[in-house]
Image (cartoon, rainbow, N blue to C red; front, top):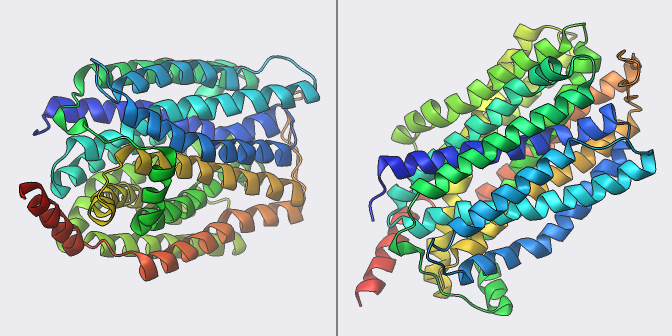
Length: 459
């Protein structure tokens, strides 16, 4: 089945909506509960980690449920619609916390955030599982992966560009009220986007999948060594990005400073978001014409590492309050992340064919349930590290009651700069080493696997 422009557009619209939701949760949950509501940063990070452990069990089961689904509306769309509506409600609840004591807020956050993870899984696994299920060739798969990841980048960029601006517009001096309105707007946009995706994206005949017991599923999963390598790489790359996004808001509020810190943060995020989209839509296609997917991946990783080193140098040299200077490493980091996100989705899709050839089973939902889990795991790990880091360096938050920005010590600010740069560098270097040593699915190998599968189908 050849995908039409309408279907590609519908798939892209769905990506915009769902990544707006994810970016809001991943980038601002720590800030909202720690800095605005005054909950312990370490506690917030701990709950996020616990939620990710729960997801480690829940996500594969979700993959199995999707694989066993067979309705008149298809295999994926019923889950996509149901999960979207539920997740939109929980997202609003996450950023509309009632007035409670600190212990009450801790209990409320723990319950709501775990529910957010469960409902997001319900819609995210079937969404990405549609890529290998409805495409026949690696070229079609790459095309749809680029559409999905590019549009996901747009959704994430929209949140980066507009969140703090809208918080100021709707909340004034009350960030708590501002976040409540932003969450409501994002939830509504999310539902509209996924409904359009469900209406116009047709699954076609490629959605037929064999189901199996849990034991057989896990055996097939862990025999797919290339899927596991991609999964680990996704964890590391996303952890680096989320470490940056979680620390950078504190950097602009307390280090860069100034009465217009929200405006400067919004401008920096806007430029970064535009660079991420540029990386997906312009740089990636250009580089792919001259280089293989694996070479573009390595180039992007190395460039991102160098950009973080430049950012560290800028901070240590005393230019951290110069927004123009910060743009240079910032643009490089976000542009590279845009290309990396497209490639990791493509590599994971290719690992489905690899697994089918190796094990005889085609497990789209199970493989892509791993992507859902690891992306959430990456945000959980990064926010947990952020929470511990904020407490270690002694950052004082909770300025919501007075409306004043607390002055931090020089040691705290230096610790903030180091954590914002050094931690991501370490994580990306590990990702580069693992990828270079273990990843086998080059363009040539993928084509070879595709031809072997076609030969088997003809027998």
